Image (cartoon, rainbow, N blue to C red):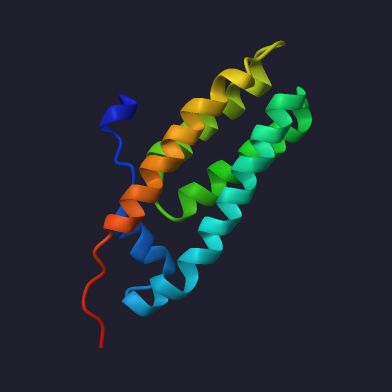
Length: 120
């Protein structure tokens, strides 16, 4: 599948993971977003310093966290970066920083636009 065809955010998956009530999502989502933000920062720091092991650990955690909340496009991107780290002797770590940041901004916009169903 072309990455552009993958949704930035699968709101149905997000709701099924965190709970069907808007309050569930509103209560739990910030923790996942904070963790993903920290993981992205760890990847960027590792990429800048050339620390391949730390970059792989951070990008693996990031991909998992994002997948859990339905951030499919960025999760898929993180997983492809992880594959590159595993498969290539000299991966282009620094070359992934801007695309990941751009994907993060897209996700933040999608989360701001997320319409939660009216709760009880």
